[in-house]
Amino acid sequence: MPKNIDHIRASKALLGWATPSLHSLIDASSQIKGLGHGFTGHNMDLVRAAESFLGEKGKLEATLHILQDIGIVEESDWKPLWERVKRRNRRTKSI
Image (cartoon, rainbow, N blue to C red):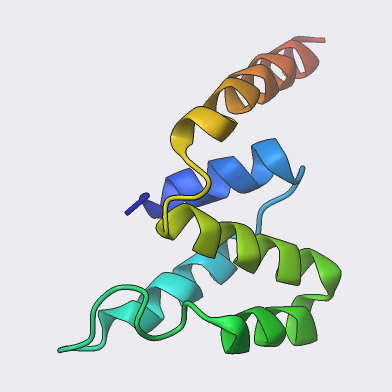
């Protein structure tokens, strides 16, 4: 499973934004004892709730989180873009 920071970085790289509290909420739902990661909170109910509270951006970000957790979106899909985002941000800050 990707770490929370990896979900945030992937969101920034692939979507252009990140809502860290959304990723924390999604992963917190899997902390229930006896239930495995993805059993609770990693489903369409969560995607609909994210859309309800955060609009289309929340829906997309929750969907991306789930796709990462089930292995459809891998680190190699977003990491090169993340490196580019980091470099661009460094250049912007130095101006």
